[in-house]
Image (spheres, rainbow over the protein chains, first blue to last red):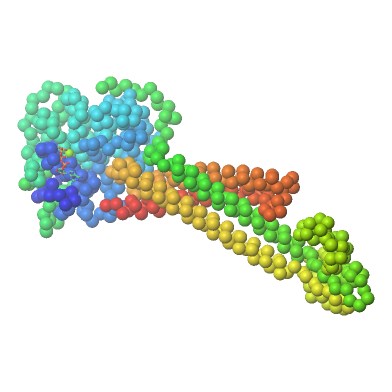
Length: 261
Length: 301
Ligand SMILES: Nc1ncnc2c1ncn2[C@@H]1O[C@H](COP(=O)(O)OP(=O)(O)OP(=O)(O)O)[C@@H](O)[C@H]1O
Ligand SMILES: [Mg+2]
């Protein structure tokens, strides 16, 4: 993919995310991690190549179908994208409200989730009054509130201390164990190593799979247990391969995740 | 972090907040403009209703009367001829009453033009007979003419039909112009709202983007703008309508105890027409905002 007329940011990427898989996405700053996630959550379209989500070709999707695909993808944005004029409660409830739920039906769930991410005392606070870490957790709560099939987190631990980072990681792993496909872009090498999860490394426009990172023997608050990579969910999930000028329409089903330079 | 329980779980605290930022810049100017447009539209409607009533009143007055001008002939004096003409006219079917105007009455009629006491005594005034017609089956000018001829009176009958035509024509014209003015005002309000919607979408691009990313359909977002601007237009048009009704009421009161302002006889009921302004304003704004927002959103990649 590319932005405008700039050189291509990502090319030669062939990635297949199995339903229920868990990956870290690493790479130098500016390598294209956020861009890759954008392609998956449909905020950007590939300049060439093919992306299919839930078994459907994204390029062939009509604009009016996109909202329904997006509702199955939870995203923790690198820059949060919270609505400043809405309270923490309303921000988290937003995806549910958009999907047509009534406030009476989700009030309790949202409050519980806010308490879970440690924002129980900030339910009525507005984002501009929150710290960076608090905003981050708010953004995470919003991403998971409608139990998405895919959870994409762009630097979800960038603004929090180590203990909170581990806690967030545990939340994401828990989501994964419930069947959600998870991709976390992160600079936190320690966290990545500690998790023992497979790593996708973006480098020079390409994607490399670095199996499971060597497990560090951590004694901290319960290092997340590795998720079973191949859950038997019938759904074909994101299959992502921008790049490849001509033929590239074969929906190949390789095992877990696959990256190539 | 302490997972402190929220102390406030009262349902009232959790009313669904407006998804668009509540106070928008330039909303004040928009409210003012829409209010002014509604004010003008309401005034136009009130004035038209009153003008219509005036025209109808005039037509009724004119159609229920006729004037006969008598020219004395032979050895008959003017007053004698007029008296005979009145007698003759009164016998015609469709005439309620016919009365010869004496010189004093004729002078009174001329007063407004010539001033009191300015009439030379020897000024030859026409001899007139005013005829009051049965409003249900008025006598025609032709039948009066025939009666005069039959009685050998040299007279010309004016049943005011030419005037009535003029009054009717200008009444229709006023109505058309008022309808045109209202249509223009409504479309001005519509394009104001369209402009504001475009502005709002541009100014809130961040909000729109987040809503999209959270799975909102275009129609969901367009509806937010529709509700926002139609309620704004309702409120603004209500202000304008109230001001117009107040202006109308003042005119009515200034017109005297029985409300008879000859040129614009406003009735209290006319003021009720202002109620339509907020409803129409809201409808125009809703259509305009929804259309523009939908078109802009659809055009986005
Ligand atoms: N909206 C944009 N318009 C133009 N260029 C962009 C845009 N977003 C990103 N880029 C460029 O694309 C490249 C990849 O950016 P991206 O945000 O994907 O990197 P990243 O790996 O997420 O970096 P970081 O770790 O700093 O978040 C960078 O060179 C960046 O300058
Ligand atoms: Mg990034």
